[in-house]
Amino acid sequence: MTSGVDSKGNYHGRFAPTPSGPLHAGSMVAALGSFLDARAHGGRWSVRIDDTDQARCRPETVDEILSQLRAHHLLHDGDVVYQSRRTVRYEGALAELEARGRLYRCRCTRARLRDWARAQGQTIGAIGPVYPGFCRAETVSSEERHALRFSVTAHERSVIDRRLGSIRQNMAAEVGDPVLRRADGPIAYHLANVVDDAEMAITHVVRGEDLAELSPLHVELTEALGLASPAYMHLPVLVGPDGRKLSKTNHAPALENRRAKENLKEAAAALGLESDDPAGRATIAQLLERWIGEWRARHVPGG
Image 1 (cartoon, rainbow, N blue to C red):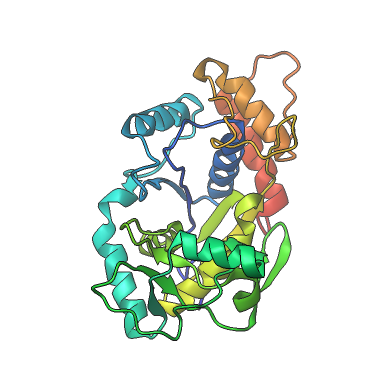
Image 2: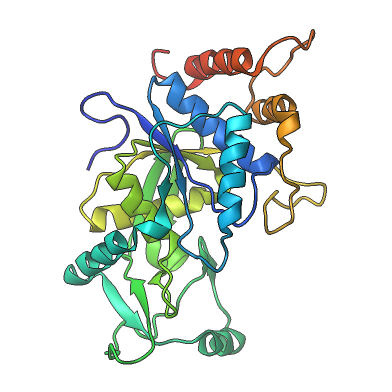
């Protein structure tokens, strides 16, 4: 398995927002960091809309997100990729995992798991409650309402992050078997993310630190499908006055396009980049060029 720039020296990064709301200050840090990393490597930067869960996504928000990126001069290469149009590919990956013995049906309801947790206690792992494995050794009929779970291995996995260093997890104890397709149909983020990164030939994933704990699971899924893994870099996460991560769930305010320059300077400062513009005369294009050079010197070997 390879990682990082491919055998031809090509770099391909991506920004993959979920259109459950417009971009906010925290998502701008991830967008700017992934953009700068791609440009500092002389590579391509794509935008992918992670809209597999249509119940959470609003179509009008996609246009708003793309408008925000344009207003901030974060211009992507190639066409925008929509996960909602790629279900056939995810179903193919599920079939491949089933053929390799890494997938099983799970009939557990939320009520059953909630009752078990109340009675026995439940370990909270990297992606939430660790599944106790009720259905792992059972035969669940395809006629029953069921989710599909990925069977993780019982060993410690280490993923090297370009900023954080080694991320280590015991997959069985700290992650558990995640659902890859819910009983009501939607494909899980984990599977769609891995399949799309591979098919798009993404060499570098640069995203928020809140997703760092997902990396070992994503690498395990990648290996189970016989795919190549990208290199990972996780960026600082912004928090609000209450100490919670800025997010759509926590009602972080949307970025205003009329403040694009100020938004970018704040995001650059969060990334540890020089954001001063004493005379206030630098254009967005000039600031981006300066930050690309600074990023190259800091994060690109031999840069």
